[in-house]
Each structure stands twice: as structure tokens, then as C-alpha cells.
Length: 408
Ligand SMILES: [Zn+2]
Image 1 (cartoon, rainbow, N blue to C red):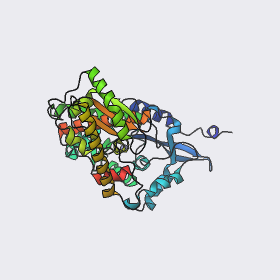
Image 2 (cartoon, helix red, strand yellow):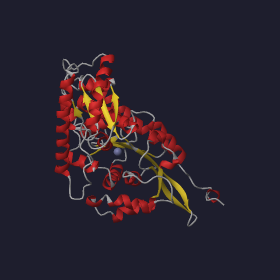
Image 3 (cartoon, rainbow, N blue to C red):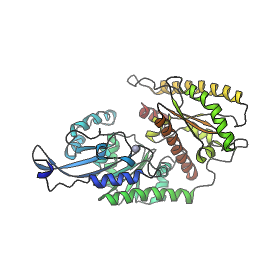
């Protein structure tokens, strides 16, 4: 007899959770590729005792919301997950809690629980979405993000200061939910958004409300030209010349970016990229680096930026790229040395993952075709975030030390 046959009273929310996740993940305005996670709580039967048990179904590590299937979910017992609060040793040792999630699993199979599992389990709501929308991260990385969130949402959406993903963030979010019963979710400083609801439909509607309201707020209140005036001479080349130029530069750039290990390159000349690299503020903003935790794992903290116009002599461009690459590697090694502790993993390699070329576009690098393309997509997300944050305020990503702690 199968377990299901003796458990007519179970209420599995898996079907609606997967449908909601796929819908949210299908629109790139809602979350970046493989970013964010969703969950539902419900009742199952403990096969050991035959009695009902409260369970959490949550997207596990890896994979994308748009194509999430049941195999991508981790299933945990809520009583055990909640008990972790009593043995939590404090924020300095919060990383130990990820290993403890394995002792909360409901049977074998499914995906490994991710670092965001605590947030989903500890927030007292049946359904929770955690997403990385460009509009939400624009508010989250604005210098006065807390104040802007109040102006944008009143007390309908709470603000949480930056805290890196982990068990403490889960406890903080549970407290926010308790302290603001009127709120439908929160903007997570430097990071993204979280929404909750009693039903799957309510949770989804609230996620979309936060994302679209932030989009509208930026559109209606943002100043024109957040990236500054166009730089004379940095206008995009006509398409055919642009592609010829890209083809002439790519082999050298790919060679440079493969100094530590072989990399596949991807080229993008979308309007978003060409506009950014053609305007006055792009150097300052690129140097500030990306912010959302999973951005810089893919893009590195900052890109390498060519500082010559697209009409410069090709030999000069090649010479300058070599100089910039050497300087990039020195900077990256210095960043590693400044922030590494005795138990940090070794340096990941000092080559850039993103190279910006005014008037031509962006080269992105990864170990295969897919990761090279996704790195570029992530940098487009970062450009959108910077444009939104600069339109309504000043872009203020999390500080370097925190970036390092996440990258390593
Ligand atoms: Zn996140």
C-alpha cells in the first residue's frame, strides 16, 4: 500500500506552488535568472508514525523559478526547522545552520535546502516569495532606500536593513512579519524583496504588487537621464561596424579573460548596454560594483571598462585592453588580500567576467556558453538596478567586505 493511499487528509500545496513559481519566473522583470525562491507550508503524513506533520516545500539550491519542478523542491519538517531557533549559536556561527537543515528533511530526494530556507520556514505565513526584481533592488540599493520605501508603499511594505542571506536574516524577517501585521512583504536592503500570503494566489498578487508599484514609483518620480549626458564620441557605431569591431576585439579580450582558466565569451549590444557605456556616469557606477548577492558570483564585483571611443585606432585599443587587464588583476588580488581571513577559500581567479566597450557593447565570460550568456544577463540586471536607483536617489550597493563574504 502506498503512503498516499492511507493519507486522504493530506493537503499538499505543491501543485499551486510550482505553477506560481513558473509564472513568476517566466517574466524577467520579476526575478533574475536562477534568482529568488518560493515556498509553501502544508500538511503531510509522517510515514513513521502515521500522524499528520507540518511540512515546508521550498525551492532548493540551483535551478530557475521559471522551470522549477517538484525535483527542485526541498521538503522539510516545520517542527524541526522551528526548533533550530533554540540551538542557533548566533550570527557569527550562522553558517553552521545550513548543515543542520539536512536534519530537518522529510525523507530523501528533492533538492538540497538553500541558504534562504530559514527565511521561508520562520516567516509565519503559508506562502512566501523571495525575488530579485530590478525595480525592487533599485529601491533596495538607493542611498535612502528606507525613506523611499515608506514614500512608495506607506506601511504596506516594510524595510529591512542589509543583512546577508542566512539564518539571522530568517529570524529578522520573522520578526518584521510579527511587528508589521499590516505589511504584505518587505524590501530587503541591498538585496531584493520578500512577500507573503495566506494563499498561493494572495502571495503571488502581493509579489507582483510590490514589483509593479516600485516600477511605477521609479518611472513617475525618477529624474531623466540618471546615467548623465551622452559622452561625445562614445555613441554606438552603426550596427555593421559595431559587429565588425566586436569581432576584432573579442579574440584578444577572451584571451585576457582566460589568463587563469579557459573562458567562453558572449557578446551583447543591446540598447541598455550601449546607452549605459555611452553616458557620463558609467565609469563611476561600474566601479561601485553590483549589489544583489547572486550578481557578483556571476559577474565579479565590478566589470573591466575600456576608456577609449569606438573609433580609436585598433592597435591602441589592444594595447589599452592589455594595460586595463593587468590593472584589473592587481585590483582584484588586492581586494582578495584586503578581505580574506585565514579560513577563506583560495582566490577564484583574478580575470574580469564582464568587459564593457563604449560604442560596441559588452563581452561576458563563463566556463561554458550558458554561464557566459547568463553573466551578461546579470550585468544587464545590474545596469537596470543602477538606472532605477540613480533616477530616484544615489546608487549605494553593499560594502566591499560584505560582497567578499558572499563571493567567498
Ligand atoms: Zn535573495
